[in-house]
Amino acid sequence: MINIIGLGYIGLPTALMLAASGNEVVGTDYNKELVQTLNKNMLTFEEPGLEELFEKANNKGITYTNEYQNTDFYIVTVPTPYDKEDKKIDPSYVIAATNKVLEVCKKGTILVIESTISPGTIDKFVRPLVKKAGLKINEDIYLVHAPERILPGQMIKELKHNSRTIGADSPEAAQKVKDVYATFCEGEIVCTDIRTAEMTKVVENTYRGINIAFANELTKIARHDNLDVHEIIKIANMHPRVNILSPGPGVGGHCIPVDPWFLVGDYPRLTNLISTALEINESMPEMVLDRITDIMKENNITDKNKIGIYGLTYKADVDDIRESPTLQLFEKMEAHFAEPFRVFDPMVKKKILSNQQMNFENFVEESELIVLMVEHSHLKENIDLLNGKYILDTHNLVDDAYKL
Ligand SMILES: NC(=O)c1ccc[n+]([C@@H]2O[C@H](COP(=O)([O-])OP(=O)(O)OC[C@H]3O[C@@H](n4cnc5c(N)ncnc54)[C@H](O)[C@@H]3O)[C@@H](O)[C@H]2O)c1
Image 1 (cartoon, rainbow, N blue to C red):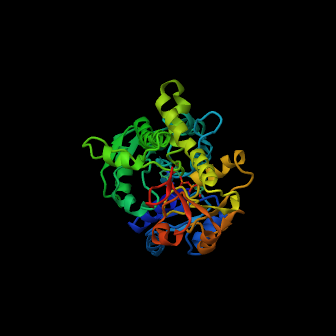
Image 2 (tube, protein in one colour; image 1 turned 60 degrees about the vertical axis):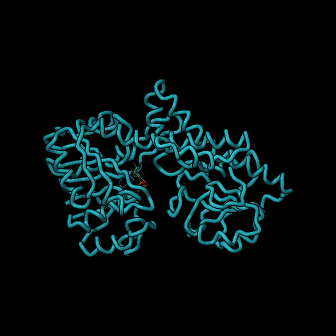
Image 3 (cartoon, rainbow, N blue to C red; image 1 turned 90 degrees about the vertical axis):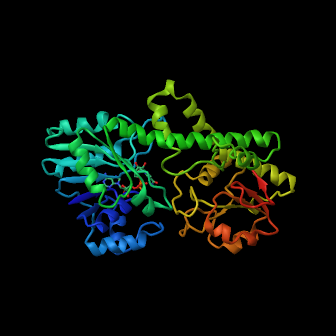
C-alpha cells in the first residue's frame, strides 16, 4: 500500500493518479478540514480533469485520513517554503513528516520525498533523523527523491506525459520506485543519485526564473526608450537560435519565485546571476504600480477606487493565489496609496480580501482603469466588455491598451 503524505496541489493528483492506475493508496494530511472535505466526496481545488480522476480513484478504493499508515511505501509531498531571512529552505515540514513516517513504517520501507528540496536536504536533514531513530539506511529504510514537474492548469496531462527523475542511493531502490511511477507515467523515467536529483529540480525552476527575468528586464529597457517590447521579442525570436519568453507583471506560485532562493541561500558567492534575476522578477509589481500612477496622472484619474485589478491568482486558469504578482503588488502599495485597489478574479470563488469584487459586470462598470494581471480564459472570452475603459495590459492581450 502506498501512503501519500500531504494532499495539496501535488499530493492529491498524484495520489488519485496512483489509485486510478490500480495501486492501493491511502492519502494522509494533517489538515482535518481538508480530509473531511475529500471524505464528503468534494474536491479541495479546481484543476482540469481532476473531477473525473477523483471519481475514478474513489471507485478504486482510495481513502483519505489524518493518520500515517503502517506500510512499506511513502510519498511525501509537504510544503518546502524558503526562510525569507536567510534565504535557505525551511525543512520543518519535511522533517515533521519524516519523523512521523519513521514512527510507523515497516522494516524495509521506501520513503520517497517528492517535495522540491534544496540540494543536500536529504543528507543534512533526513539521514540524521533515520540514524536518530536507530534505523539503518538501505536495510531498514530506502531514501529516494522523486521531484515533481507538473504545471498547474495541465497537471493531469503532465502527470501522465512528463518525464521524471528518480534519485536513490541504490539502483534497486530506484527501480522499485520507477515501477510504481510507471503505473501511470508514460514519460521517460531517469534514475540517478539523490544529490543530482535534488539539484536538477531546483536548476529547472531557476532556469525558468532567469529566462523570465531577461524578458522582464527587456521590458524595462523598452519602456525607457518608449519601444514595444513585444514587437522586439517577436522579431528577435525569428532568429533560429533565440527564444525569449514573454514578460509579465511578476512571478508567482510556489516554485519559480521560491526554488532559486535555495541556490542563493546555499551558494551566495556563486549565484550573482540567479539573485539578480530574482530581484528583477520581484521588482515587476512595483513597475506595474509606477505605470498605474503614470496612467492615472495622464488621464486625470484621481480616485483610486476607480482602479480595478483583474486577476488575483499567480497564473491563468488556476485558483492558486500563493505569492501571486497581484498580492505582491498590494503588499508594495502602501508607499503609493493607503489602501489596495479593487480586485476581481473569476477563479477565486470565495471572498478572501476586503477589496475583492465578486461580480465581473459591477467590477468593470465601477472601474475607469482596468489592470490586466492574469490572462484567464474568462478574460479572453469577455474582453469586449472592457470597451471604453482605460486598460493597462501586462500580457499583451489587447491591441489598443497601455502596456508595461
Ligand atoms: N504546486 C506546484 O505547482 C508544485 C509543482 C512542483 C513541485 N511542487 C512542490 O511540491 C511540494 C508540495 O507543494 P504543494 O503545492 O502541493 O503544497 P500544498 O501546500 O498545496 O500541500 C501540502 C499539503 O501538505 C500538508 N501537510 C503539511 N505538513 C504535513 C505533515 N507533516 N503531515 C501531513 N500533511 C502535511 C498540508 O496540510 C497541505 O495540504 C512543495 O515542495 C512544492 O515546492 C509544487
